[in-house]
Image (cartoon, rainbow, N blue to C red; front, side, top):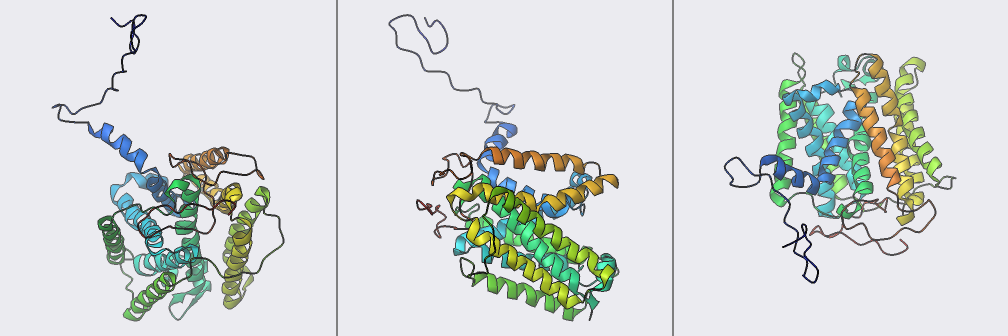
Length: 389
């Protein structure tokens, strides 16, 4: 007789351990729903994180969507159909077509027009956005708001969530998240959500056909440019700096704080509209000029994470102001975001400056390595990072 589970008397071979208990349905026909959901959630952690971040950064932290709205199933369905389906669709398109960050950001511009021009119509209705709309409104278009939100969505709704997921789950780099049928479903869900927003949002204010056609043309232009873009950026002006962790965080913070300062203080100082738009584009190009040469390579994961943390610093500060205005639940979101970034930073396997392994962890956890998104082959298999890259 065994002395205990897995052990026998002296001289006997050990018995195998029994299988773990499985929660079954009440009729005994198979695993219960919670038991099936837990392994599903573990298998799709990267996809879930991508969707969560795509809603958290642009909506929850900015206060555009109060946290309690998430308990409204209709509002949650719109957020998932818009942000969730949108970011999954863009990442999946980049993987399938062998694109890189230029494709991701340009498709992010198309996403911005779909949401803000067709869906919510804030690119045209000056009354929806207050002083910024009145200041930059000309020929029926909120030009300052249009420029700001196109860059904002490309970066914070699309780019940063994809970058953070690439950092946290490097084994998913270049892998498809959905099947061909799932890809078609994402496109259908996103399109249906935008059409529903067009029909339901902005009652009493009708978008004229020239603006609708112009918005669709802008979506088509951003999409065509994105699909035909090179996998990497062209050579950009380089700027002084050593690419250290504090410097990367400071650059991320400087980008976002300057970006919002340009838009918020423009009406106060009556800065010409063209100067503002050129300033925002120049700021974005300068930031890319810092990122591309300094944050690539297997030893730079901590820098990329630091840049991402710096880039959301303004959004966290903005959410604290929202809490003072009564949106107290956002404090929980702030705490979760700060905790998550601190935990991801602790996952870095070696101190800054030390060599890092070039192969990702088998479990899919760990840290990503390359700044340029290398989606791998069309079949979705991950592309190995060459040693010393």
